[in-house]
Length: 167
Image (tube, rainbow, N blue to C red; front, side, top):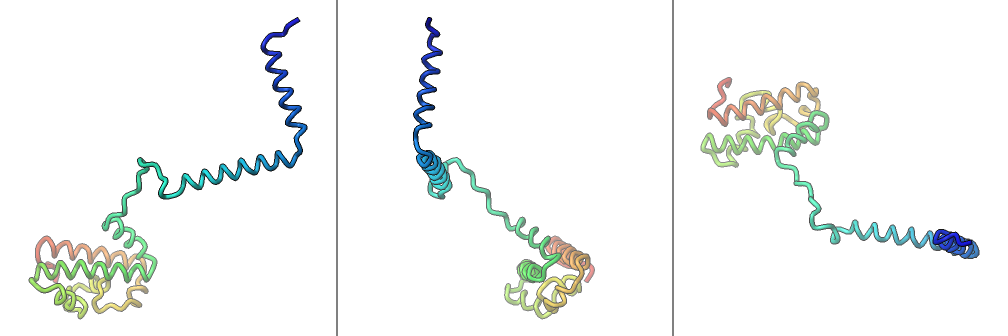
């Protein structure tokens, strides 16, 4: 009585299982360890920077506007970020003032640092004018945010009209 091809397959599986069972346990641990080590090695090789797929897309570097927005957000809480933002806004204000007033960039920067321009106190508290870093750091979050907004509005108005109407 023949059971067909199913019997042949079942016999093969049983023989393989008996043979595997006859091998020492150390062999199996070694085999599993080797497979794991090879798997880790191939994973590391795929992560190697020189072996990246060609169609992998790298994220764009943040734009200067994105960096400035992040700096404004961080500056609400930290003195180092406030100082950095003050320096960056001072550079923008000096370039704008030099262009509008027909000054050299150095002369415009000197006017800002000596407190001669702008006359707006909120802007002076943000720019590198007469405000020391300690005073800028002690400003409460809301007052600091309002001073930054006032400074940006003043610079925008100066850029559009060439003058600051309030002063």
